[in-house]
Length: 176
Image (cartoon, rainbow, N blue to C red; front, side):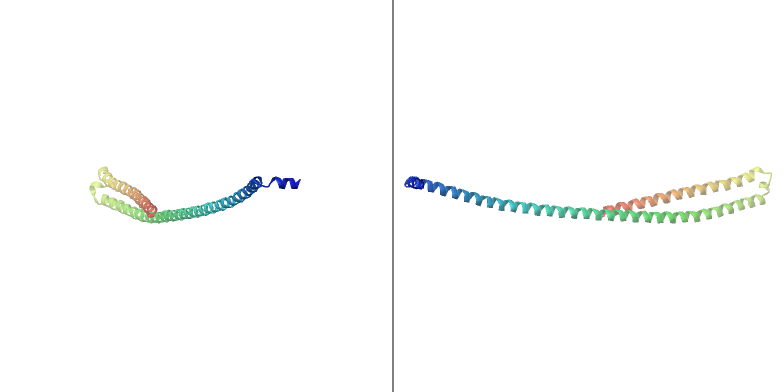
C-alpha cells in the first residue's frame, strides 16, 4: 500500500501534495510567529499601562501629602491665632480688673467728696432734701456712667480681639 501511495504521488499530484504540506507548514510557522509578535505587543502595552498606573499612584500620593501638609499648616495657623486671641483676652481682662479697682476707688472718693460737700454746705445739711439729693444724684449718675463705660470697653475689647483674630486666620489661610 505504501508503494501504491508513493506511485500516486508522482507527477502533478506529488507536487500538489508537497505544496499543500509546505503551505500547511508555512501557515503554522506564520501563525506561531504572529502569536509571538502579539504576545510581545501585549507585554509592551501591559508594561506601559503598569508604568502609567505607577506614575498616577505617585502623583496621587504627592497630592495627598501636599493636602495633608496644607491642612497641618492651616490648623497650626488657626491654633496660633486662637492662642494669641486668648492671650489678648486675658490681657484685656486684667486691664479691666485694674480699671474696675480704679473705678471703685474713684467712686469711693466721689462719695466722700459729695458727703463732705454736703456737710460743708449749710443748704445741703441734714434735713435739706434738695442738697443731699443733688449730691446723691451726682454720685449715682457718675457710677452709672462709669459702669456703662466699663461694659462698653469690654464689648469693644472683645470685638477688636475677635476681628483681629478673624483677620489673622483669614490672612494665614490665604497666604498659600
